[in-house]
Amino acid sequence: MRAKTFPRRQVLAMLAAAAAGAMALAPAARASDAYPNKAMRIVVGFPSGGAPDILARIFSEKTSLGQPLVVDNKPGAGGNIGAEAVAKAAPDGYTLALGTVGTHSINGALYSKMPYDMVKDFVPVILLASTPNVLVVHPSVPAKNVQELIALAKSKPGQLTFGTPGVGTSLHVAGELFNTMAGTKITHVPYKGRAMAIPDLLGGHITMMFDNLPSALPVVKEGKLRALGVTSAQRSASAPDIPTIAEQGLPGYEATSWFAVFAPANTPKDVVAKLNTELNRIFTLPDVQAKLKTLGLDPVLGTPEKLAEYQRSEMAKWAKVVKDSGAKAE
Image (tube, rainbow, N blue to C red; front, side):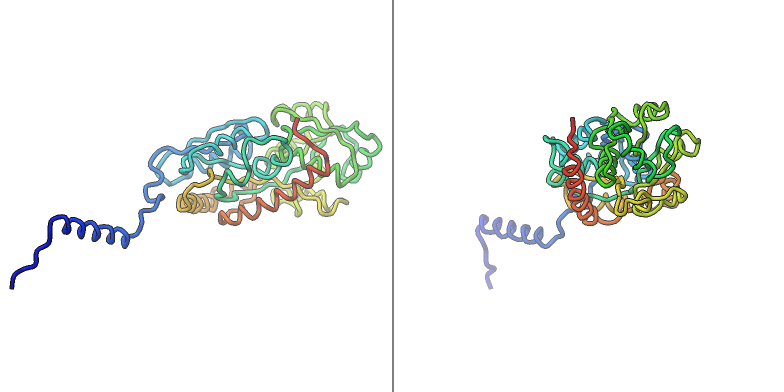
């Protein structure tokens, strides 16, 4: 029997079809298989030393992804400068943002013109941690609790002042929420960072300040400032003796700061998943958990979807606070 022969062109076409079929059956190579293969960068929109910087450096020190992770501080405009840099970066997982309640929930309502969209320009990776703010006053202030402070403020409308690290920070809107709920007129005095506000508070040049608990606790323990109340719904495990503002006559008052990792929009899902897994691992390490506790930071963690849902609720909440208070970024 004579073997059947095929023209060379037909044979090549058959081989090409077979190869294509094999490729279709083979599992597709995932973006995360080779990720990361170069140095990574996490942008912090605030100066070094604060909670966002601390969290970014824990990630940098503990990562096991096999590549260096550089912490890049780009402070300014309530964190907007750093967030904008990430929003415009390549969506490949090599540039990340250490976002905050300000950069990803508050600023969109506070600034008339934003350099980025808080939702559309990013993909959520993980909600790392939260911390209460704490209301602290100069020791010369006669008020020993929140109700006494409210009475004092109402007796001197516009004369009491609260300092903040800048317009649009969580500490700014915490003060605006206090004014709205308490019916007071405590004047906002914005500074270019906490490092500039604290000396004026310690010197008695401003009356009070809402400060992140990790930053304020050491100064309170030294007796240089008096803590009147924490801004969380429940008392903090790091400072259980400080009552909440809500339990002192302002039920429903809550203004916590939170910190999360975001990547540029359109970053591959499997790269996001790899980052999420790594960050969940790092921030459940016993030594990391212990460090967070000493700093007054409460780890949250979870999925990207959990962060997305939480961000939506926070945006709605703070948009109302900003609208009700009339606050605007200068």
